[in-house]
Length: 314
Image (cartoon, rainbow, N blue to C red; front, top):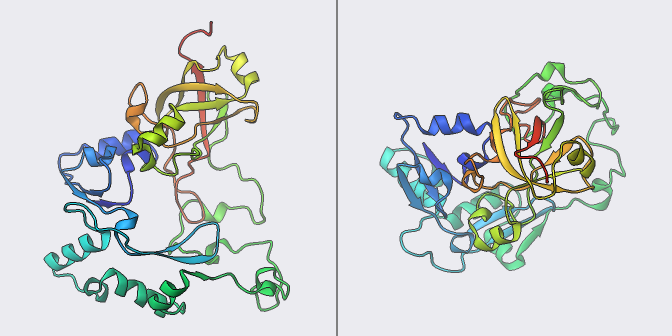
């Protein structure tokens, strides 16, 4: 297994299953990484990877409609290699053939821009970015929606909705015919009366940031936000150690009382490494891996859990 750009031993759901999988004797793992992450620590081989200023890249940013060039600014240290260099080197050794394997990163960016109708690398370098926002009438649906009759569809054809994923997953045929709440993932019950959301933290955009000492210092420690009324009913004090759990396992962290959280909801921000928790089990121990309809993926923010204090609040 070759792993690039992800850290499954921290970020994948159902962590106990993931850990058992990586512990298999018949699994050989190579991790190409910038940091010695938890996944890199269990790898058989670790390859050093470049940082974003050490290679040429192109970005389609989330939250805006621009194509951005990320040019190489400095030489990488030591034997650090880019994703593209590692893949091309593997292809050469394995005898794999593809036009992209013979291209440099800059050539690949130029080919991608030309073949997607967004000009050339030279033009992007001159402009620094490309604004992909459609004209006002199109982006504001002045002339209607992208159907032959221009009308909006409230009733989706779930099996034929265009999406980047080529396959369907989960109970697609059971999806509501019209937009509605769908009690299909995990509803709170008597044994697990709270809903858990594992939201990103302000300083931990992804698990790479947990390797930064400054980010760790700003976040402090693994915590779970709980409404003060819920906490009081369970004798949970602000800052006290608590246990969150469900059928997948248990996690220890500290409570933070916050009246901005809805009652019955717990929010554990960030993707702290497993090692940052007292028992070595991170928050994704509790998240499920069942595929959600219509296109799969884990429902990280739909988990039922219990919470209890590890000792009586005093």
